[in-house]
Length: 200
Image (cartoon, rainbow, N blue to C red):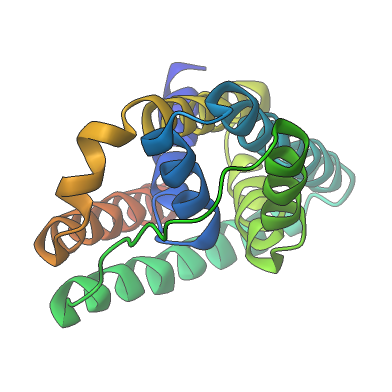
């Protein structure tokens, strides 16, 4: 279970680190200390629901169709390879930074509804949580361990981003910080892809 938990945490944190509207939204609310708990809980619980759905669905599918397991293994490794390559390319290209636009104060209800829209209306969230995490989890004996690791990664990231925003904002306004982060993300994804191929 420990290996599955660590793999789930590593892949989960790697996927969630990408620059995006959701992370900028959380960062902005963290910097301004507006409804931080409501915003980070909305993001983390939404991720947990999607991860559970992906792991349960792909786990059941892998058991029902035994021949599907190697296909998912190789497909997951290929997907991680491409994702990792994109992270390395972003690091090499550079020039990206997380900007936090100023805006008027929002009520808690508006903040949560906006956060839900940024999460559930984003097609990439389904690809990352339901499809990718779900398919990779099927390669591990402990599906629940993998899911718990990925869920913990989501909670750690969003709470760290929301409550550590004032410290993180100046750092991640620098393109070089994102280059280093992209290198780390690429390395984690390729390491998990290699582990999947070795288990084939």
